[in-house]
Image (cartoon, rainbow, N blue to C red; front, side, top):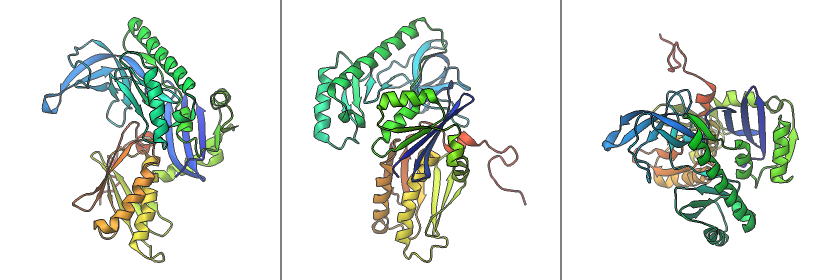
Length: 388
C-alpha cells in the first residue's frame, strides 16, 4: 500500500507517527524524545564480556538505557579486544525490546536527505530502489570524484532527484557531523550521547514522497521545519489533536488483535513467539468468492500490510490455505514479494519450504507494535488462556 497521509502527535515528551493509505493505518512509530533511538550514537562503557557460539565474543555496553546494550566483538573491521571499563563509540542498530537490550555497532553511519556517510567503509553504492540505473551510475561516479581518503557513501532513492552540487554540499555537511561527533567523544565521559538522529518524520516523508499528499501534526515548530526542508512540496496541516481526529487509537487497538478478517470472508491468524512469527490463512466463511487462489492472493496483500503495521521482524512463517504445491503458490509469492518491496525495512522472501510454508526474514530495528503498546499479563504469563 502507498502512503498518502502521515499523522504526527507529540505529547509529554513522547512522539507518535501514523502512516495511512486511503484512510487505513499501514505503519506506526512511537519514540521517547529523549530516549535511546535507532541511529543515535553514544560514547558507551564496556561493562561485561560474554562468550558466544563458535568461539566469538560479545560485550555489554552501558549507553544510559534501561538495560545494557549488546555489541558483537567480531564486527568486521574493528578490533575485538575490548576491556571492562573501556569507552567505545557505538551506534544503535536495534532498539531495546521486551527482555532484550539494544544492539549496537561500531561502524557508525550518518543518514542525510539524499546520501548516507559511512566513515569506516570504502566505495560508493546506490539504493536498489533507484529505477534509472544509468543515472544512478552517473551519480555514483560524481560522488567518487568528491570522495576523500577512506570513506564510503550510499546514494538514497531520492538522490537522483537532487542536483549533484546539492549532493556534494550534503557530503560536506555529513563529514562535519562526523568531525563534531569525534570532538565530543574526546571530551565526554561515558555513557554520553554524541549524536542524535533527526526526527524520523523527515525520513518517513522522503521514503514516501512519490505518493504522500498530506502531513498533519500538532507541533508548529516542526511544521515550519518541514516546510523549510521540503519547500512546500508536501501539504502540511496543523491540528491540535490529530490522532483523535483520524481515529488512530481505534486502529491501533484493532492492529493488536490476533485475527484479521479479509473482505472475502477469510481470516488471517497472527501469533508472535520468541522464536518466530507464525501466520496462518484460513478460508473461514469465504464461500462467495470462489477459489482458494483468490483468498490467498487477497491474504498476501493484507499480510504485507500487517507486517509493516505490526513491525513484525526476524523469522516469519506463513501457512497459506489449500494446497502447498509450488504451481499454486507461485502467483501468491509474486504478490507478496511485490507488496514487501514497498517496505522501508528490508524483507527477504525465501520462497516455499519443504513443509509447505512460506518463509520471510525481515530486518529488526525497532520493537514490534505489541512490544510497544502492551506488556505480558502477570496472571497468565502471556498464554492468554484460562485454566479449566
